[in-house]
Picture 1 (cartoon, rainbow, N blue to C red):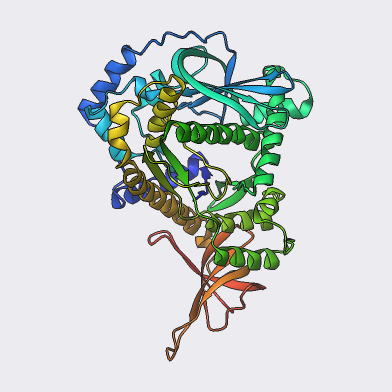
Picture 2 (cartoon, one colour):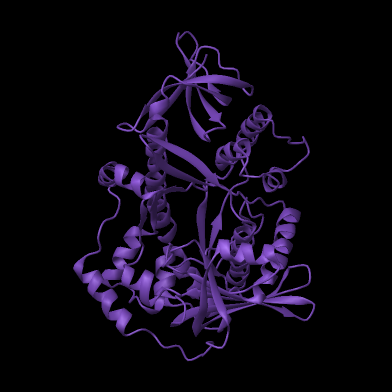
Length: 484
């Protein structure tokens, strides 16, 4: 399920650090790597792989948030007749890790990078993730280089991936790219990124035609001001969505390659539960967001503006539509069609191997398919256990992220206990028959955008109402409202 991101200023990080340290201990979030794993990573960083294919002439660039060091992807876009050519270099941690080694065992135990408001806990040691395996600028790096040809409408014509040595020319931020595109000039931003808007827009149109949905969750920024905290929102830039579409089209291409190879690992997601859609329609009504009875939820989500508080609150609540994600592996016998419910296409994770274990497996399958070679034994042997590994570590990472959100919200709201807020009650669990007491529901508050428990004897479902904040306790990380 998509998660919310908080960015804390330095003072707030200092304030919350003891609570975050305690939270990591409580949830047994992964700590430091063992000495053996770190030693292996250090040796691998020094003796980096050298692939035969030299693609350092491809003028790749990375586009990421400011300060990012674990750079998974670098891209180059060009015209290809009436269509387009996407060249997409992906970091290659498999070239640094020996299957079955101490480092490999610990990476499998982590499964993915854990994200918190004060930083991340990496899947790989920093010497690899932020060093030898990262696609940092002006460094020759081993990579998995995708070449994906698109037609004039943005549909995939052909895709292949090979190992190659690459060199990124620049590390750009989303803000730099958006400013260059909006200003009509490129300056330090390569002119070829003008195609990012064209390709991204076409891919969004194809997504809408398939019935897919992109959820643009705004980043929440918390700043300490005097003796209280203020919460604001940074809406995603258009270029972030266009950039995400490059990753999505690569995952769609990868799924097609896996199906043809008859070996693969798909990312799956069921269609949105009608009960969740109904709950979201109530939220839309109460927040004053138009949602026609025949309009698909994907189309409605795509036209929202996360800089508007009511829209930000709705987008936060809409994360409930994307529940039940899993992985489906196969080797030999093909599974039935297995589209990802939000993407409306079969899809595989292959573009973030520095942050997700499963991507390393997916890349190896696609590399073997492109080369018409056998899939490595370690991949085939590990496929069966992979969904359970990702499910277990994914639950741990989600629990950590969720409790971080609860902690930050309780800290921000603590001074406002006793205050009233405008909100929409989107779900109600009435007391059981014969049992007296309060009903328990879920309220979506627009400013600040919070989704929390609400208690009351007569909860007006789906209507805009006023609720009172009765609990915001950083010690328990609980936020509770009451009505009336």
